[in-house]
Length: 326
Image (cartoon, rainbow, N blue to C red; front, side):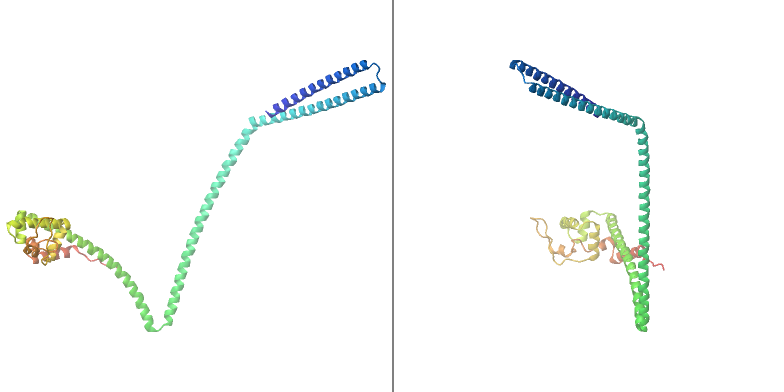
């Protein structure tokens, strides 16, 4: 494409020079004709003027011929450059069609080799980094071990310089530290076991309470009347009290806890909803702080002794102390 543009430019310049040459020749002819006309008009012409005019015409024609020769020489050089560029174009076209494929394959091969080398370098760097980390960790461990050994040796040497009683106290102190650690471990295990045992006991007690209520096979009004020692007319009030207390203390555990505590409220008024009156003080004296009758254990188990015996049997069968294995 570049060669075509250069060739077109050269041809246009050559045509332009030829046109200029023709125009100059035409101008010279016109000037010569005008001079001849002037000479004819003047009649007699000086010989020197004629010679000078001829000399100018010859000089002008020589200059034009010289310029034309230079233009022809430039045109030849441009044609030579065009030929050289065409030859170079042929070379590049041949390289594009033949040699370019070979170079492309070689480039792809070199890229593959470069990627392989880079991958190997990354693997080597990673292995070196890992080995350095392992070495540093080993050095740190050895350093800590040596420091501990040095501290132990320094402690032993310092203990050797002490008197007998002080050495004995130091030994006892070390023994006590070990025993305290063992004791703390045993206490934590014991606390977990006791907590689980308490939860199981409360769960079993609640289930036992529910089963006892189901085994009584009496109506709810009669049970409430007998538990509080009230008449039939006050059973509805006690039932409302049980319902309100059950809402504030959820589950059977509150019932069992109130029955086991047996705490009696000292004339504490139980406030009901708006518009309701306070109940008699005899009912309040017969209820616990949670609002439950304090004699439920006797009603469920027959006596406090029977309840405590069952509780003790369950505790001895379910509770096992952790045994330390030396």
